[in-house]
Amino acid sequence: MALSPRPDRRTSLPPLDPQRFAPTPARPLRAKARPLARQADIQPHQHDWAQLVFSLDGTLRASTLRPDGSGTSYLVPPSQAVWIPPGRIHTVTAVERVELRTLYLATPASPLGAAAPAERDAWREGRVLAVSPLLRELVQALAVLSERSSLRPGEQAREQALALLVRDELIQARPVPLGLALPGERRLRRLCEQMLAQPGRHADLAGWAGEVAASPRTLARLFREHLGTTFGQWRQQLLLAQALTLAARGQSMHLIAAELGYRSPSAFGAMVKRMVGQPPGQFLARA
Image 1: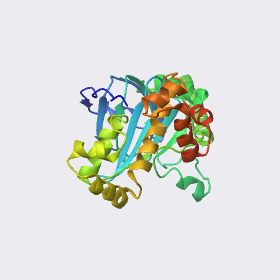
Image 2: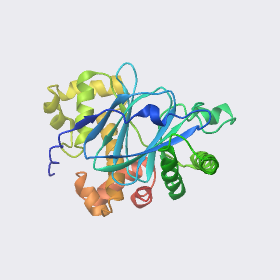
Image 3: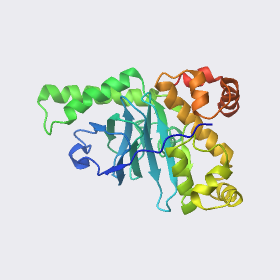
């Protein structure tokens, strides 16, 4: 299996004037446009409002963090968005050059309003949602108005109408079962971060063990203790997310299988069917 190239040097950037776009009772939904160069990181931060982040072009990675250093990482193509609840520390990384679009929603966390508690609970944690063409265009239109500190009466009515439509599209958005648990344990976290940066660099735990100065047996134990899974299961979840990213770039099933280290498209297809219960063509159509 060919090794992936070394990752580019990362650039760490602060959040772009978040208070300027903070939602208020008068303007409860705000949107922001921001381009990010390849391997640019938005530094860890948090705010009192919920957030939806996606890219018009290019793959992004959003990670939510807990006080103990553990968290969840989401690798998403332009057809998908990451929901980040209020108060959650998070970072955003441009895997490749991206045109970032961010939607900020005033609390309560859920866009469902007075919905039943069970329905609202799904919005209390990070999740991946499919981005419909309508939602994509609505957020772009809202971002134009959000750039303005004050609005004329006609613009206020337009922003309110866009906000209602955005909320409805969020309620209708299809959840996508993606998300990789990240550990707080130092050695395992370093390994997971390296795998996220270069998914195809090694195919087995023995290959990765040399990267973090720990034995395969130790790493296997850490996966079980800190993530409640095995290396193989965690890696397959990563490869599923990477497959969607490659499909979004228009790559064929054959090329995707080869890029991810599988000897044949059929071997890759068997993994997809086993993990998500769908044929690979149906799964990759989500991209």
